[in-house]
Image (cartoon, rainbow, N blue to C red; front, top):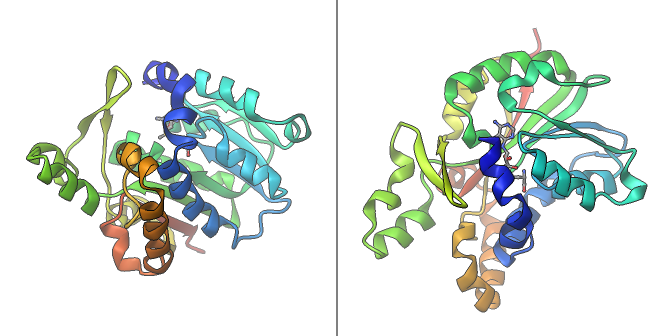
Length: 263
Ligand SMILES: C[S@@+](CC[C@H](N)C(=O)[O-])C[C@H]1O[C@@H](n2cnc3c(N)ncnc32)[C@H](O)[C@@H]1O
């Protein structure tokens, strides 16, 4: 698995982070995070990729332990982190499945996972993770995850139009799906907010919201690079729909924030 992400790390920012759709998707997550107090908070980031979010957290005054399964992704983090943030962002190569190997100097205010890292983890491993991570979270802390959903309306319409019904409805299947990453394929698991809430049974849902119902999945970026005005319009729609929990099920990703139930 780590080799697959190692092999695409060099082009990850060019093909996602810096694209029009990639930026629009991330801004809706940042708009949510900006409502939180981040200053002096201690954040564990899972599947941090090239540290775009870790840098955002540092710019907002937080301290971050940014982790990823891919050593190459972490190498690109090293290039992105400016000298003034070197003390605020620490890096560790870590598989979500090996969370007990976390090298942390204290408990976290937030555990954060953006854009589908959780979709690389099976439900049984998620249940194990939800239990093991408990001891690393402050009592008032929370887990914030942005996860690819089971019913993405854009995907259904786009691939149905191309008469590729297998791909159009791939997320519905209650089994792992092979998804192409670069020249390889990885096992991917699509989740509903309900399934996540069930896996994290010792937690309660603080927030559940759509992330990009109107903004399309990133594989449609090339069209929207040429139609920026349309994308701007879709971003405006998402600003309204983002407040409606119902749309979480039908968007490309949903954001879920979970807090430990107090005993
Ligand atoms: C789509 S990228 C998202 C990266 C980043 N969070 C972002 O917002 O740009 C998925 C990331 O998950 C990482 N990943 C996949 N499976 C993982 C696992 N089991 N443990 C830790 N990281 C994993 C990959 O290396 C990759 O960097």
